[in-house]
Image 1 (tube, one colour):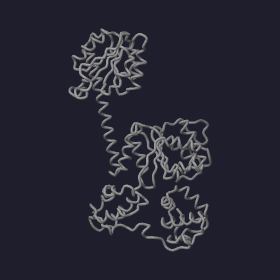
Image 2 (cartoon, rainbow, N blue to C red; image 1 turned 180 degrees about the vertical axis):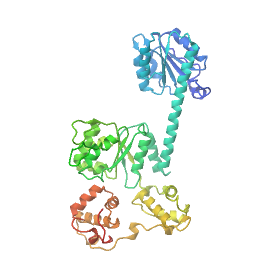
Image 3 (tube, rainbow, N blue to C red; image 1 turned 135 degrees about the vertical axis):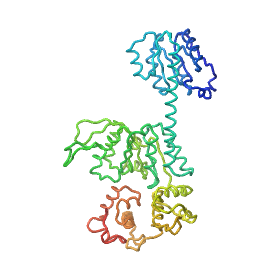
Image 4 (cartoon, rainbow, N blue to C red; image 1 turned 60 degrees about the vertical axis):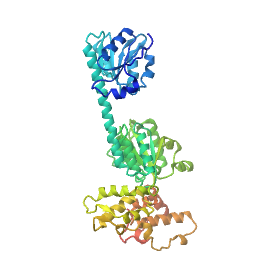
Length: 490
């Protein structure tokens, strides 16, 4: 083979501007070990307006493929000791968006079909007696490259709009979250999302999915804290018919998310036995349903979320270190509302549009916003949405006023009881039991809402109720002040 013969009729720094001048005109790299053919192709293509780069040595491809403006590669299949099919495979692996037209003097239907299957755009037979066909083929390849590039730009633009419509806020903290999600749009690494309850962890997970290469696949969320320990393995991995009493067969959430994203919310609530099986499923990329004799492969991306400190759980031995490192490849932290109070006006506008469509409310008074800015927001954005929805329901006019805001749970206080802080013994168990009772009282017996107030998963909440004997023998109302006589844990 001879030495490489790099040549371009137009300096590459101007290529971006000139490539848009005419349809079918682009930047073309010709790779062949015959100098006469290279010069011939340069004359043929430059006369048609193409920007041509010549290379007689495939070893020069590394540098030439760094050109981001490259549209088409014309590749000889037989270059001495170099196998053109190997070069084709490499091109489609390293620069899949670049179109490749293969050239050979030993044409056959079989070789043409083989090249197409490997990703080639078209096939040209030497010698090039039909100059018009050469030019036409290259123009079509350039047009296809442009079309695919434009489609990708539009998809990213639409995904960007979805991202902005989902993540409401312009504070530095939210801009950082948005930038992080954008930086992961071509990445499929496992992500763990940290943050207090109500900060929008599932929304961030959905955006990570929607803007990823798996965006067309399924997004399957599962609240690990809400699943009873007795069925969580079956829910995640599935089961065969007859695997246990009344089992009718189920594919499980892993298989349902095949080709998409599995979102493990409150992953810190998983029991140790399930943690071990989850780790194996992630490492082997396969699941074995209950009662099945063979494992089933799955292709998923895992995004997990928790409000708990997983590193501390690893240190204390309640969460597996190997599973933690498998999940925590990339970390995304959602800021609490108290750290981005400047976003409240935008969030209010967002929730007005969401909840006031059938209401006369169209705006808010300044005192309404001032009142919101002076709250602590332990429930974060979820609590804010609840306050807005409630204010819309209570409002008698077109503007929300400060008087339309219901007092917070902290402002309401709690009725005196025998388990007040000053009356409790100096015992962590006593304080924990008091917190459980208070959470149930403020949530009117709703265990899910009570668990959310305590920022723990529902299954953990139930385990603590059992530990302290709450709700075991008598109605909640008989022991929890503020819950009606018909109240019960639900």
